[in-house]
Length: 182
Image (tube, rainbow, N blue to C red):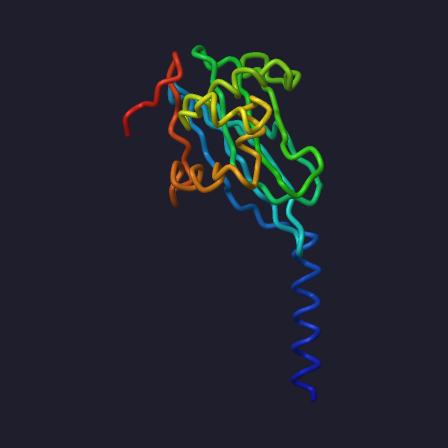
């Protein structure tokens, strides 16, 4: 009986410590076209829940550009880099929330966030190019690549998993939205 009590105490403490000190699990890393900067999207697991964190790395310095405490189930993610790497757009699909996704814009030169609507269209173009989404496919998703990417019924999440592989690195798109050879 004493062993069972010890086991229960250890389990309760472990569960509660997980809520206090979340574990950071990388969902995706994206390197800029000039390879000088990177975006890392992390799932922060705390207890039975998870939240989202996005970090920007430049010159060895890490800046958190987004974090929340919402209960998340992140899926497909896309990162847009402008050709000069000044503007960065990040999309993270999340079927567990009513919004279905998070979009974050960031100005790497000024070091501050940008309105999401300034990066939404470039993210749509990136998705269309990366996954070669046809107009007929998009017609089933309100002609919106983001709706396609975040739908549980499009097969996008499975294609994303194949694209990033176990390394969880998103191959960059170059100017003109063509895939760089690996």
